[in-house]
Length: 445
Image (cartoon, rainbow, N blue to C red; front, side):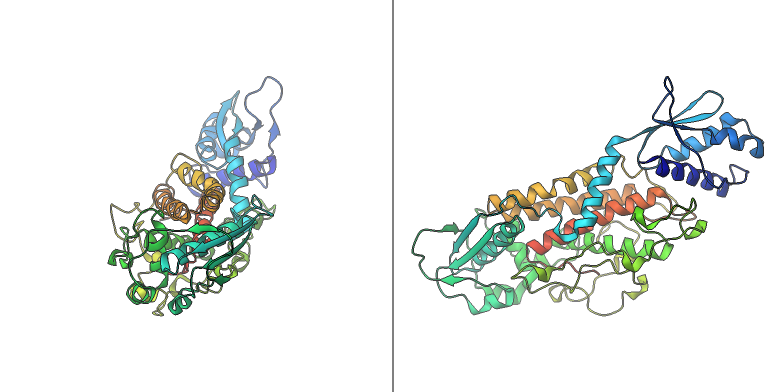
C-alpha cells in the first residue's frame, strides 16, 4: 500500500463515518499521510482527527477512535494506533502486499495463470491403448505438459475409436511405436466411449475419467449429473459461475476489483461521486478453452461480461447432460447449490478481505502453479481436479465469511473491492483448470 493508497483509505473512512452520521463534519478534499518520524509508532501517521475535531464538536481522541475502527478493517492495514492528542499511526500489513501481487498476477495472466516454462525444450511422446480413459488421460497430460512449455506427441496402439471425435480426442499416430514410449495406462473405464457419452455427456465423462488417480477405478455413475454440492464437478462449475455473477453484480453497483479503475479523485465509487471504470473492460479471462488444441468444447470466451443479472433467461445455458439451466446463482442467497446451512444475514459485513477466512483460498490460488507443474511432471491430471475441488470449497467458505458485494444499506468499500478481487481470482483459477482438463466452464449455471 502506497502513501496515496493509505490517504484514500483514510478519506474513505471519513466518508463512511459521515454517511453513517457518527461524525458530523465537512469531508476534507484529501487527507495528508506522512512517514512516521524517528521515535514514532508505525509506518505512517496523519492528523486528520485533529483537523476534524473542531467542526465535529468532538474531542480529537474520540474522532480518532471513530476513524480507527473503520480504517483497521481495510486491506493492507495491519494495525492502527492512536498516539498523542489524536494522531493516527498506521502499520501496514506486508502479507497483504504479497496477496495483492498474487491477485494482480492472476488478473494479468487470466486462464494462463499457472502456465510456465519449467519444461521448455523438453519433448515428450505419450503412447496409450485404444481405450477411452487412456485416451482422455493422455490428452489431459498433453495439455498440462504443453502449458509448461514442453512439446508433446501422442500415439495410440490402434486406430482411434470413431466415438472419440465426440470428445475432441485426436492422436498424432497409431500402431506399435518403433521404440518404447512413455505409456499412459490408467485402469480402463469398463465401457465403450459411445455408451458412456450417451449416458453422461462429454464434460461429466471427462471429469469422471480424470478425477480418480490412474491406478483407481473411475467413478462413472449418475452422481456425475447431480446438480448439487455432492457432485464435485457441479460445485466447481457453480463456483466459477458465481464468481462471474459477483463481477456482474459489482458492475451494477458501480465498482470493480481493479484498483487501476479508480483515478486520483478522493471519492469513489459512483455512490460517492467518483469515477468507476468501464465494466465492459473488466475481462478477467483473456483466453478461452478453445485455445487448447484438442478441446473443442467451451464457451467462446470466459469473459466477465457485466450483463444485467436479469439476463439469466430461459436459454439452456447449463450442459445438456444436466438437463437444462440450473438456477441463477446471482439470485441465490445461499452459498452453495444445495443449502447446507443458513445464508449470510442481510447487512452482515463479514470480516476484512485478508483475514483468516480468506487465507485458505489465497493459499490455494498461490499453490495453483505448483499443482499444474506437478500434474504435468507426474502425468497426473487427477491432481488438478482435486485442486479445483479444494478451490471451490474454499471459495464458498470465503464467500460466506467475507461477502464481496454490499448488503442492506452498505455502500461499496475498499474491502468489497478487495474481496471481489479474491473471488474473481478463484473463478479464473477454476476456469483455467477446467480448460486444461478439457471441460467447459459455463458462465451461467
